Amino acid sequence: MIVARTVAALRDVLRERRVGSIGLVPTMGALHEGHLSLVRAARGESDTVVMSIFVNPTQFNEASDLAAYPRTEERDLELAAAGGVDVVFAPDAAEIYPAGFATTVSVTGVVAESLEGAERGRGHFDGVATVVSKLLLAALPDSAYFGAKDAQQVAVVRRMVADLGIPVRIVVCPTSRDDDGLARSSRNARLSPGDRARALAIPRALAEVTDAVASGVCDPRALRARAESVLAHAEIQPEYVAFVDPGTFEPVASVADATLVAIAARVGDVRLIDNTVLTPGHTVPARGGA
Ligand code: AMP
Image 1 (cartoon, rainbow, N blue to C red):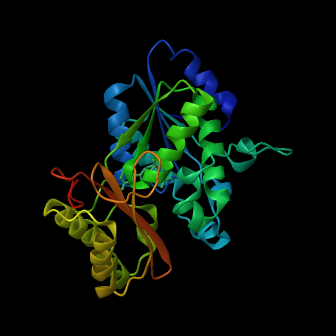
Image 2: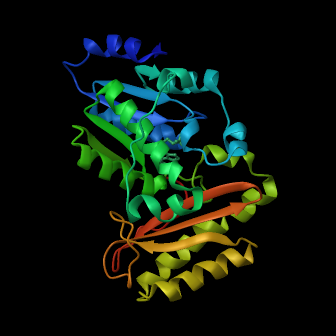
Image 3: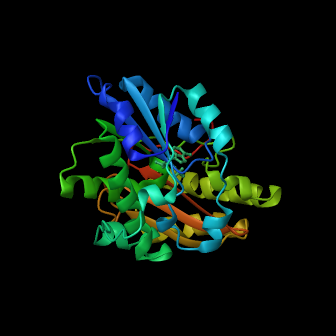
């Protein structure tokens, strides 16, 4: 496995590999099974798999969250190599944001300004869109792989890629969960054992909503009340429990078509997000083991 620290080095490595297909898996490191599931998807369809590892400072709205973000590069490189990554792109901040950097890619509208955009502030998805466009331009992959856990990030990236005409296929991989249902996240490592147990109320709330939709409930207010009651039992007050169109993130008046239910909540001092897609008559439950 090759480790490239600069865009120039990455392009050098990829130049001769462009005869085949290139798959890019963007990450912020602290790799876990969720990231590796993206690598497996990329490995299955690409001749060369590139993983970027970059803790992007511009998408953090809290300095303390950025400071506390786990950085485990040595272990990440071992996991990436064992997972079948060919090239890791691991730049430092000055490589991505050199002195004088003055450009922001900003997706506007509900897709970027609601939910995570509202809670974390405008800068969050500006940071995501800017760094993802830089990574796509650096690697020029045929396909880029993202996790459904960050559903709004997927919607923002899709919007940006369509609007800018970036020639890349966006592939979305299912949320990887621990056996008990908790969505895998680099931030889970910061949960105390007690808070980790309480956090299970989040996938339970999603499962409750999924079951309610399967039994014919389609009013988002009734569904939200059920989710909030499951969360309240674990003393979790969510930042939001939202029912939205998965592409536009416009709120839905009724769960009549495929609808994303998304939850954000702070458990202890760790902010967690999770979601699932509700399809009346056919639902994908947020249960463990994947
Ligand atoms: P991150 O390192 O948290 O920025 O995540 C890098 C990529 O991995 C993003 O596309 C995430 O959506 C994806 N990812 C993170 N956690 C999971 C998970 N539990 N299941 C699937 N994909 C995930």
